[in-house]
Length: 446
Image (cartoon, rainbow, N blue to C red; front, side):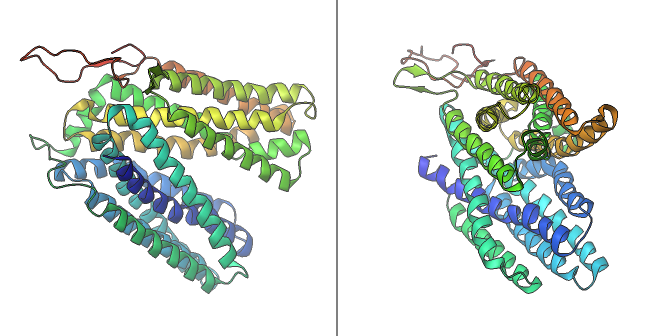
C-alpha cells in the first residue's frame, strides 16, 4: 500500500473519530448540564459503548472468514453513523420523555460500540496486511493523527452550530456529522482492497477454536495482558489530573482545561516521534518497537513520579505544564509503538487469522481504558477517605499508576514480534532457500 492508500484509510479513521467524539463528549455534557441528569447516566452509556467492544474478536473473525476487510469497515461505519444519530435523538427525546429517551440511548450507544468494533478492527488488519513492515509505525501515526484531527475539527465546528442549544439543533448537527462521516469513509474505501488482496483461511474454523488458538500463543497472550495493563495505566489519570491541578496548584477551570490541551499537544508530538520506531532512515536505525514501548512506558511512569514530586515541592514552584507535556509525549510514543507491534504480531498466527488477534487486543484495550477511568476516580475517593486529604489522594493514585506503567514495561520485554528493521544491505539468497519471515524478539538485529 502506498502512502496515498494509508492516507485514505486515515480518512476513514478521521470519520470514525468525528462521529464518536459527539457521543463521548457533547452528548455527555448535554445530559449532565442541560438535562440535569446524574453524571452516572452518561458515564454508564459511555461504559456500555466500551463494553460492547468485547465483540471485537468476533468481528475480526468474521472478516477472517470472508477474507475481505473493506465490507466490515464500511458496514461498521454504517452502524456507527446510525448509532451516533440515535444517541443524539435519544438525548433530545429525554427532554420530553426521559424513560423512552434513555431506552433509545442504550440502543444508540450499543450501536456505536458495535460499529467501532467492526470498522476499527478490520481497518487495523487491512493496514497490517498491506503496509510494509518498516512503515507500520509511521502508518499507525498517520491514522491516529487523522483521528485526532477528526476529534478537533468536529468538536470545534459542531460546537459553533450547536449554539444557541435546542434539542432540534442537536439532532440536526449530529445527523449531519454522521452522514458526512459515513460518506467520507465510503469514498475513501472505494477500490482500496483490490480483488484477491485478501483470502480466507485455508482451513475453515469455528470462532471458539480460532480464539482458543490465538490465546494459546504465548506472545499473543502476553501482548493482550500488556495492552490491558498499559491502558489502565494510560487512562487512570484522565479524570483526576485537572482536579489535582486545581487543588494543589490553584489553577482555575480555564487553566486546567488549557493544561489538558498541553497534554494533548504532547501526545501529538509523541505520535510523530513514535512514527520513527522500527525504521532505518539514511542508514540510521531509530530503535526497535519494543525499545520505544518500554522506553515510553518508563518515561510515562517517570512523568507521573514528577507530579508526585511536584506535590512535595509545595505545588507552585514545580514546572507543571512542562511535566504534563512530557507525560503526553511519552504516552503518545509508546502508544504508536504498541499499535505498530500489534500490526506486526497480527500476522504471526498465519494467514487468515489476523482479525481474531487484532480483535482480541482491541477488546483488551477498550476494557482496560474504561476500567482505568473508573478505577482512577474510585481509588482517589478511597484514598481521600483514608488519608483525609484530597491532594494526597490524587498523588497516591499517580504513584500507583506509575507502578502500573513499570509493570507494563516489564511485560513488553517478554514479547517477541517479527523484526521490522530492514537489513543494512541486500543479502544474497541461495537458490531454493526458505525465504519465509522469521520471528525474533524485538530489539534483536535481523
